[in-house]
Image (cartoon, rainbow, N blue to C red; front, side):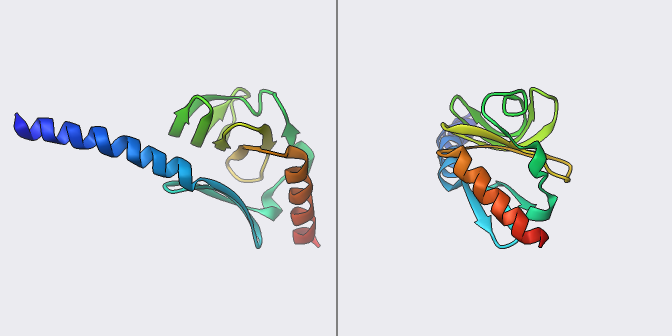
Length: 134
């Protein structure tokens, strides 16, 4: 019985710390050749040549609304990992407060993320994708 209690206490301490670590390490980075989203155990890399610029959606829309978490962390105000959006698509998400952006790809998933400045993010993404395709 003591072992069970000790294991439950250890899990009760470890789970919040692991979740906190995931949230603190999550980032959005423009790398050479790809957009890298996430951190810790939940991370996705999207090559610039797989991004479909014409389908980008900024703001509230079915594409940016997460409905079902399939493998990830989902808290009010924070989402990281694999989800389904309200349009039914499989997406990798890094969502905090900020402007929501949906980035469609040629891969088997799309991306939903939030940024402080969605217009600046989309401009930078267009520049990177354009450079990749030249």
